[in-house]
Amino acid sequence: MNVHLNFTNKGKLVIENFNNEELIEIFSRYINTLTKKYAVDIKVPVDANQNIVEDGSFKVVLSNVQCDVETFFKELGRDIKVPLKKRTDGKLENVFKIQVIE
Image 1 (tube, rainbow, N blue to C red):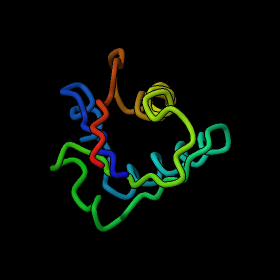
Image 2: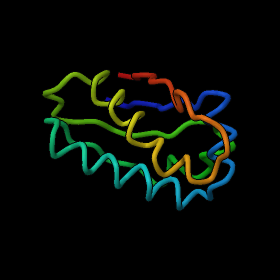
Image 3: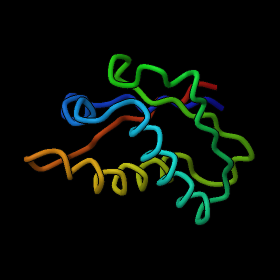
């Protein structure tokens, strides 16, 4: 299952403060932490995430899904705000919306 995390307008403004490698590292780290709690395998395809800021989305591939995908990404959305807030002044609401592509 492919999932695109499409950044909101506010999310797009925030991710402009990061380079591509930093975004892949941040998302990968938080995804790996959450997979210890949720029964799902997730790969972050580097080749599909070459221009995250320009594309306005972050792409992941899910397999062995044995949890609620919406809940997983809702929690990821909350967790990911922590490192992103460090490079922004204002309050950070929803950073991305989930698009499941099967």
